[in-house]
Amino acid sequence: MFFKQSTATLPAWFRQDIPDPIAMRAMRQLLRTSSLHSVCESSRCPNQGHCWERRVATFMILGDICTRTCRFCAVASGIPIAVDPAEPEHIGQAVQDLGLKYVVITSVTRDDLADQGAGQFVLTVEMIRRLNPGVGIELLVPDFSGREELVCQVASIQPEVVGHNIETVERLYPRVRTSGDYRRALDVLSGFKKAGAPAVKSGFMVGLGETAEEIFQTIRDLKSAGCDMITIGQYLAPTRQNRHVPVARFVPPEEFQQYERAAREIGIAQVAAGPLVRSSFMAEELFSVSR
Ligand code: SF4
Image 1 (tube, rainbow, N blue to C red):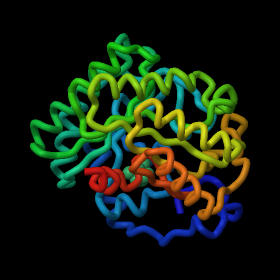
Image 2 (spheres, helix red, strand yellow):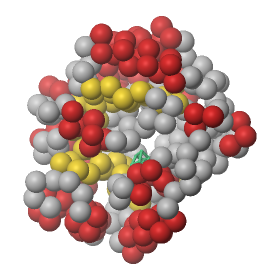
Image 3 (cartoon, protein in one colour):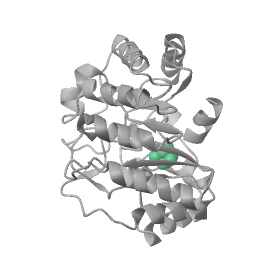
């Protein structure tokens, strides 16, 4: 188990097998020797064992320090390091080394950069494609402060899937995603759609104190913004410190099924919902069934 949250408080449906230590070590070594970061580690993702055993990781570019301090997130915040010009090549090489057919790239938020990191996404996609012709690429990007030209810049490189997570319902934004804006996040998603992105994805967490009706409304909003794919997972507090909001409740698996059905009825064809679902969890499989 990788949760920092006390396992004693977790319901039985979170129990998982102990991961293979050799596979874990190999992935960690690959990341360290290439000076790369993964969101699997930085977010303390509960699926790390499952994904890394399959040699799947979600790469996090632009460093591992975020300029924002969302109260649900495990990633460290502060003053980020300079952008590494070798990072795109290292990612492309790692995709080759892992033999991936599909890769998910995300980043911290870089409000300190003039282009908020959009250019590094473009360079990374170009390098992945150069070194790995035919590989599928999914980008999970920050909100670029809602700047339309940056949204268009990223959409123009035509990743197979581009996403931005809405993360929570509108009412909880001031408490959970303090420097984010629910409407701006929707605008980013609809901006991708308008700019011709092949598939647009978003995701959010439950268990933060939202109501079922707020969840249905969020799904409707995502549909209106043009989302083709969504993920819904259980929020787990990264720490018990004040910085992070506590879990309001653990949503049972049957309730996730209800949200998945509702999303399909609302018209979103590709939905993954469950306690352990994360935006990049089984991303290749979710993308494959959409084709
Ligand atoms: S679900 Fe995503 S972030 Fe979590 S371990 Fe898997 S690839 Fe990494």
